[in-house]
Image 1 (cartoon, one colour):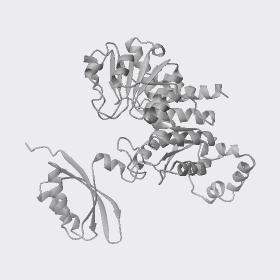
Image 2 (image 1 turned 45 degrees about the vertical axis):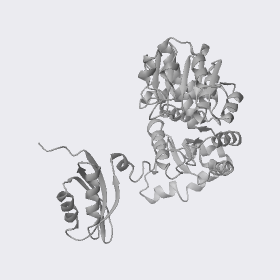
Image 3 (image 1 turned 90 degrees about the horizontal axis):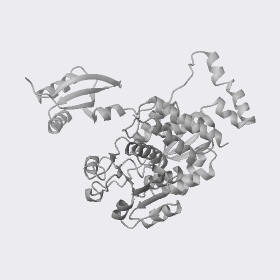
Image 4 (image 1 turned 30 degrees about the vertical axis):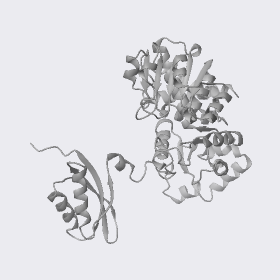
Length: 438
């Protein structure tokens, strides 16, 4: 029985458009022991042909041997080597297209010229009609400066584009919102605010994404104050909403009354501070936080929380502990008190493994694999856009968290993020609060 080839890659290969060149590539791969799967022609140029060739090989070293042999072939150029994730991203994940079919002169006159002038006049007389006659009321800008991309840090806005496209795809899939990535080649808060204000007329809302701390706080606060459309920094408030939902569910499973409990937050970056604010808004009376930064602890005090001097103090005093530090193994088993709820949310490695926390006496423990912002931001924006709200408020965010928790089965942390019903319930909850506050 032949051994299974366990490394599969798609090679984007350019060959001269002459007979036999594809054969040369296939023969070279075969001679070195690689297996060829699918061959797809993706582009034909004046003198060359571009193909995606799927190659199965034994190991990464074996793959490198094949690639080196192919580069020695005259006229053959390897443009990309992709696994299934990279291949899914080829050409990007999003595409803007017309909602209307334009096939005749009559169609053209109706959607462009001369008919469109009438629509422009309507909007000139009443700018609110842009929400009716254009896509503005259903379009969100996803804005990043690339300073805090996932757990990768400051890798720049272009390298962060796959994340922005992913957000846009999720907006479309779950709530039908058109979202457009906006990449900013600046880290200056003044420049970011100025740029977003200048593009804001074309959007119904602004989602700030992967903007680093501490300038993310200034950027969001200024834009909320100076724009008349909803603005939300997802790394702060999207994370906080889903975390609150998870803690509500955890407390229900552990038999703890959340509003009467002491909550401790380890790590007071963008997410950590927003989580503290979210718990205060929900009505938790005692919220504590630990961080190495004095500035972060000052911010916590400003928002009504209590900074503590050490992790051991926080662990001793708090019934519920949430950690978002990105430091694996930060929480020691010996610090766990009997009956505590422990959510160590850093990915891919948590501050303490849930199994270790439970073994040490925690009544409920989980890591961050299921605490996905996808549960929050689509429904939140769908709700505020439906309500034509000019801002996203703490009561709206609290309603979103409670809606997510209400959809969670007993013993679970959060519902499945791909559950369409959850996004609908979140949207309805936010819209209801938005209308009641008018």
